[in-house]
Image (cartoon, rainbow over all chains, first blue to last red; front, side):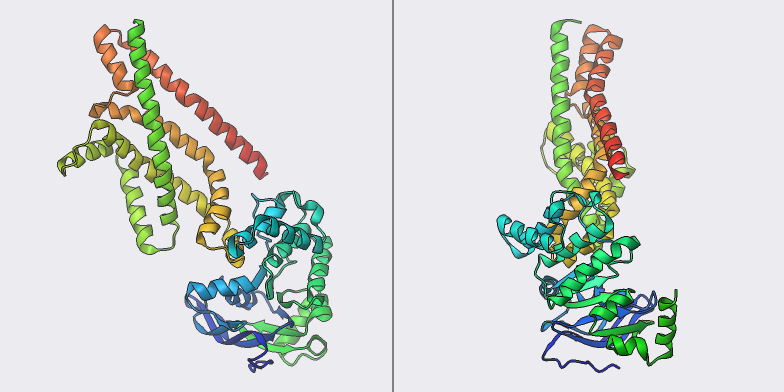
Length: 253
Length: 213
């Protein structure tokens, strides 16, 4: 269970014995995993199991206290250079979208490429427009986030992250805050991204998405990885009682 | 009251406006530094600025002007009343604006900082492009409210001998023995200066309340 499923050489992300505490509470318990280039991982588990914490550690939104996190060969340490280098390669999509409300859709997408990558305005704009086109929302470029529906906002958030041309995308419950009729448009966007070969780690309860897209489903409970398997095996033949209980709850609701 | 006296009051008004403007502009710069230090996450900076704010919010403005005026003279800085009151008012404004803006920086949802970090924006860009534009918008009504307080606060500069509007009124009143007329006009001048700002502040507040809905 704790053996990395990929060798160090072709791994895009490796976590080795990662531990994290919030004060006295241990949020991550000896997490070891690895993700290779182009692999799609779905991370699931009951709430409070540490799955969001885990992906937030990968781009250092949360510091971890023990173990090693390595992204594309860069070891995540306390120095700002490594953190910055990793964030440049890792895009993230949040449950609450977190678009910048005072900027238009287009400006949301142009900001980071200009400020963090030093792109010229015209270059940033053409990149932003192309990616807004890709998430099928180009016609909304001049609007402000508050004028869009939740599903549209989340697609803009995906485009905004893609404008940095990341090697990895992290999704933190991207459809949990959406009205049911908007879930599909966001999942379709994510499926399109997966088909284009993006390396993805998705924290989600959308098991249909997991079946269709994931190369591997990882189940976490109480801050530890309980089991990981390809979706066919994970859903039909879970190895652990804890996993069976979880699947029973979310598949028969 | 003759034209000469009225012109003298207008000169006083001019200095009130200049003093207010200098204290406000310098106070904005100082207040921004204080607000950024207060939210920096660096313990030493946060404590130092918290103490600074505590001192200036916990003592009367008049005492602050006295301390700057006499204190600087005592340690050997020979400065005139004009520089002393401008310095005192700037320190005062920096503390209050720093506290107002700290509150509005902290009122910007955490997700905004996280999204900016995830996009690998560094501190300067996170603040300038993402956090401050949102925070300053929220703080505008309170900032304008403080500006009105500051304009009225400049009247205390009269006590250390700086001839702004209040002291000009005092001098004219002692000359022509019509205190009610003179101070009536002085009061009206303050009112005409402050009231439009108050109305503007209330207007902004309504606009933001409407756009937040």
